[in-house]
Image (tube, rainbow, N blue to C red; front, side, top):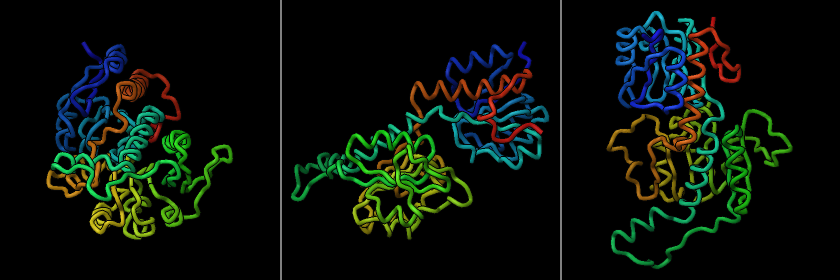
Length: 321
């Protein structure tokens, strides 16, 4: 009989992660995609959950308060904005994440999006499907010589920079922290300065009160006409209304959005069907290797928390009281 009960906020978990939990004596209770806080709270109370492995949806105060036995919320990924950290601290619940688990996957997705935007793959595909063939003036952009601006300069942004350089793309960044000389990336003094010097603005910072909506009308207007925006971080960082207006005016030539302010976004969201937007369902970090890494790292944290082991300190976001 299982000693512990773990809620997995998604319908599946990598087999290697399942093995880690089962070896620690855990029974896993799966949910549907993006369960609400109320659903999680009810399930946590019913199964007397010891842990929540958070992949999809919000783990809010209701979910955290659902079970008096809850000891840990382990994120299946890096971002923790979907977890109510204040509620976790109030209830003495540990919160962990999985740093580095999907770095390469997100960087590759960002690079693929940049190439697709510059070469006009979506608008050309739509035109061909509509019966057009090499309309007058049809042209993609040269990749070599593009100026890439990175908002944030953590592990993913560094990986994007490394992928971009062999294409002849110049790279700059804006971040609150320092940039080491060895990285070879100039640091802009402000986001507006970065935007003004970027043909492509790619978002790689966490969602915080300071970054929410920071890519807004002023930043988009500062970009050169015909620029591109890529967001594989968190939807709330980009002001979606301002982006739509900039796309419709033609000032911004295209955008690639893997994340949205509300997930899943409503089906009538205008950016989902915009002819110059590449929309993907928050899957930039979802590959077989990254899913295994994220799941195993989260499972290891849960197993350690429940069995008296040691959680690697770099994974701890909210420590035990």
